[in-house]
Image (cartoon, rainbow, N blue to C red; front, side):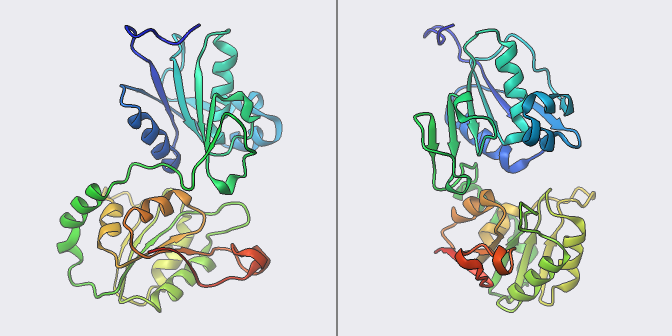
Length: 294
């Protein structure tokens, strides 16, 4: 199969899951292409990623639930992110029976990178250089200064009484050796609170409820705290907090939120979840906050 001729529309699938950081990268690439695209959603059942890492995508395939139809006719291009998508990508490669279905993978593949037409990655993943590997300093995202300014204007009256300096705290979750547990959450509340006049706290779907509760109970300065898991349907102030904060602190597990925060050109700091030899700086030293940009 050859690429579509000039008279044929390019068919693009954006493969998405419950991981909002991965989805943001997928949509950023799809939208940058400037052509219509179709969203195909899936979710992993318990144990899917572990099976994928240990035994490969074929073993993990039974633990993947398709939320949208992923059947022929196959598209010309699929954009996907994260190892949780690899069983589906492997299935399509096998099922397409020689058809030319291009695949762009974002992040760190556990499959051989040669399986993909293009791997777009960032330095922390240490993907070996290759002709089909593109390494960016930070992951792609959809956050713009214009969107931040619009949301900041809408939300400013709601936090007008909170004193400066306002420090936004953006919470991710646990990753590898770095754990966002109740103890780490208490450290965030105390150490950031010591610098802040007030705090603007926003978590994510990966933030453990126990950690969020511990942080909430430990904050000793005026604060606006948004819990992503709260079922009351409250608006998410994430973009507004980026615009209204004087400084931004992001837990070190989330390079996606760090990239989005850096869009503001404000002081952005990494909160080091590691301690001792597991600290995020060489040699295991652990400053309270690691400054990343101004």
